Structure formats: structure tokens, C-alpha cells
Length: 364
Image (tube, rainbow, N blue to C red; front, top):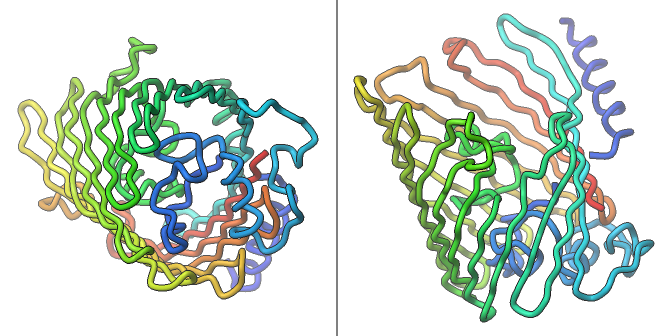
């Protein structure tokens, strides 16, 4: 493809996707503003999903480039709700362009459209989400949460277990190469301590008892973290799981280092040991490092590096990438994320491939 044709395709992709509305997630980088626990903005103890009234306020005053008072409210305040009811929802789409030694193409994916409601009555919360994901109607998150104190939390239901950075970007090497991509939510029981300095999650993964045909993994994970100096958080994650074909252990450190309210480094490194019957153990790793800078409120530029190798003894399992991107929150409810990467793929270990994505997210 000629340079001019490449530019025309990228421009067309941006214009096309900008006309389409794009899952509210916890933004881990908010540690740079002193928010070390997701519960400040989200109903869920580990983030994602329905926002609290305070979280919606911050979406206007702290996250977006501009916004009027109450603009961040559910459907802009057009649907009033009683004080015990929290409402939310998300629409997300993505455009992808790949240029590899064998394939050069672009495509547009409508990923999900969800609505979610949480009833908060005293220390009890009942949350349920339903919608379309990959063109199928399903409920990927529903749970009961009991919080006898501000710090102590118990939860049971279907949701994504707390692990690592808990970043919203499902395409990263940590989630994708370890099998925790978006759509992999399991049924879990969880106990958590959510203190101002120290927090920890202990999760029992029960797999998918609702689908007997699915050989879902079961296991247990723990994620302790310590916050200090107002804008720094470091922690460890460990997971041990089994399924019919294999068992594995995954663990490693993560850190969110808010050097200033505008500059933050997010980093995690996970080592994996995977054992299968009749085969040798395979040891590997996944890592993600991302440096974010916000020169103007609502506009973030970032550089990142990713790497993964599922088997240290097999170079064909190696993945590497570096790139830069921009994240833009023009007004409450809208998020745009444009990323360019160069990648070394297992299928083309000697050549670099080009990868461009534009993710669009609109939360109700």
C-alpha cells in the first residue's frame, strides 16, 4: 500500500469511527489524583460498571475537558431515579488496522451495548448488567455485595476477578496472553479490605457452573496493594488455577506511580508456570509498561511497551510491541483512544508489523 493510500485509509477510519458512539471501567491512573481504591467512583469494589454519584461528578470536574454541572449524570439527568438506585450502561466500538508481512486490512467492530443497574440499600448492593456483547445477548456481570464497614467487602456473583493493574484496556498483553481478555468473566466469591493505605482482594474462582459444556478454569487469587506518598501504589498478584487440560500459577508485581497529577507510570510483570499431563512445564511471562502525560485536562498522551512469551524455551511464543497513543475525554460520557503500535508477532518473528486501533466508548 502506498504512503498516500495508508494515510487515506487511516483518515477514513478515524472519521468513520468518530461518527459512532463507543464499558465504564476503573481508570487505574487516577492514583495520580490520590484515588487508590476504585470504590470511590464505582459501585464495584474492583472498579468497572456503575458509577457512584461522586464518580459521575468527577467525570465532569476531573476527567473531561469541559462539562456543565450534572452533565455526567445518567442520561444527562433525563431519567430521574430514587437515591438507592444507581443506573449506568456502555456502548463501545473499535476500528482496527493491521499491516503484517502477509495481511494488510482494516475492520470495524461493534463490541458491546450494555445497561446496568445497582440497588444500594444500607450495606447491601445488588448489581446486574445485560446487553449485547459480540452480537450476543448476555449478562457478563451480576453480583451481590455486602459491606459491613467502609473498608470490609464481601461479594459473590459473576465478575472479573481483581488481578494486577485492573486496567480498562482489554487488548493489553497481560489480559490477552494470560486468558483474561474481556468476556472472560467467571463466577467468583470475593473478600476484600479497602483501606486508605492498604487494600487486598482474595477471590475464589468457581468457573462457569452455568455452562456445563464450557471447560472453564477454576482457581484462587490474591491481590494485596500498598499506597504511599498520596499518588503511589505498589502491589502483588498471585493466581493458581486448574482445568481439564492444565494447571497453572501466575504471579508478579504491579505499580502505579503518580509522579505528578499530570504524569503517571503504570507497570506490571507477571510470571506464569503452566503444567499439562504428559508434557513438560512451560514457564513464561507477560509485561506492560505505560507512561501517561496529561498536558490539558481531558487530553492524555502516552507511550507504552508490551512483551510476552508463554514458553521461555520456545521463541515462537514471543510477542513484543511498542507504540504511542492519545486518550481524549472531550465531555462527560465520551472517551476516544487512538493507538499506534509496532509489533513482533509469533507468526512473523523476524518482521515488524503495524497495528492501529481507535476505541470509542460512550457511557450512559
